[in-house]
Image 1 (cartoon, rainbow, N blue to C red):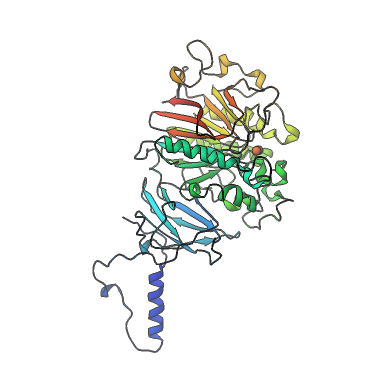
Image 2 (cartoon, helix red, strand yellow; image 1 turned 45 degrees about the vertical axis):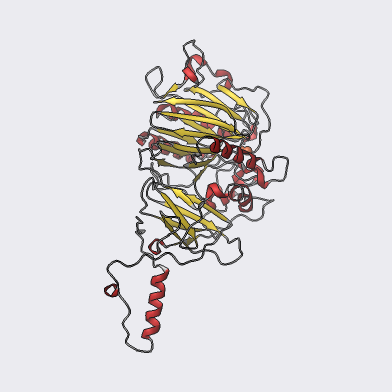
Length: 503
Ligand SMILES: [Fe+2]
Ligand SMILES: [Fe+2]
């Protein structure tokens, strides 16, 4: 059964009725406008009566257990943009009571906030307010916080540095191959779609302009974005300057190749205009007060997105983010906790976590030295980063804040029965609470290969890593009640690495 959005919206039929009343009253014919007393006690259901519009970009934000944001811009037919959506649980019938008007942002995005939704339920929607929906215009709400969905599994799809389609070079098209490899694996393994789509930064090369986002994000994943909530993090290429910015100020965004920055007031930074991210804990977690970093709950999974590009570069803003994530994780009681940010603490790929690269990679050191101890202390299970255009996956580690040479398996890694770092596979699967009786270890994955795999550092591999591969692909995480399995899937749909954590 449909639930009416709490905010009172006037649907089109009501608008027509009011218009008709006004016209009738004008010549003083004293014909009473119809009211509810004239209606049969059970009025026939009426579908939304608008016309479906196919926007140039369409995506979902903050899909939770009882709310979701549908966001769009443009009309591929060149006609008027849609100003409302209709939604419901039946694809072929979207009730008129569901008509929800959109707000238009300073950069011309329309966003409709759907509220009062039922947890763990599939909803269909029509941009433009038609009475039926296309199959790919549907999403499933999250289960209530702490719960699993009916199928018993929460699936995350994670891509990093996937923004290659907006830059003309030999890597263009790589994101399509990665996407198709992931979809091929899904099709051959039960067909379960992802519940969450996480992007690890460098989502639109080379400068993160609005036009580049259109090509690298919206034109690359249209069906996934119209059916799956998108949760991103900021990469260096989201700040213009060809990825070389070392500023902590989003207002310093500059894109010489991509034209003018986006207009204020939201931000000159297209990433912050495009995304509508939770700032007040409205999706779960502790409110951060900024869209640059945030957290949310999706059933039994808690996800934290940190800003390793801007907020870490200034001592005061870094301290504020560190305090916030400490508070957020201290309050977190979810079964599984996943953290994403762009700059990997441990990598020997196209970036080297032992080098600051003229300041561009200073965040690697800041995140490793100041943030990874918090992950150890508060039971984070998985950390995903990009930036290095390679796949690398660590052992189950903790307490490693120094350069690669300081990694000591005996003290930093969970060990197998032979005293070697455990693989996370077969009889060496990890347990959330480790052998020492505490939940103090984390698997770190670099997945900056969502569109291109470029090169490795001279000192590859990093000693904290179990597996590394110079190959493009993406990650699927399946979080169930008592175990979590993460898989790296290449562009052929083959699983090249996996590990399991049991709880
Ligand atoms: Fe990158
Ligand atoms: Fe990067």
